[in-house]
Image (cartoon, helix red, strand yellow):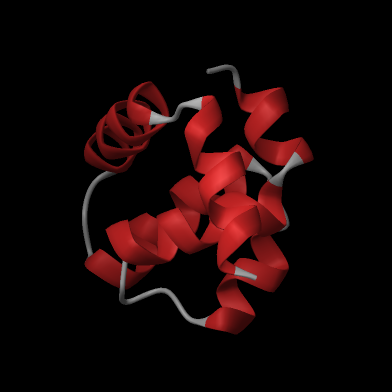
Length: 77
């Protein structure tokens, strides 16, 4: 799934990101607001990891994203 789809549905998929990166706060997710670079930076900051590792984790997470994420999360609300 491309990042534009994720960013456009950020409210729905941010729950998935919270499951992946539990150290990020609700305020962090408000600041991130679907911006990939902001998410990568917050992952680096909260987990004390290098930029390359944050990008790797983010790419793997993005690779697992499917349309079902949007459907499932809409039904959770």
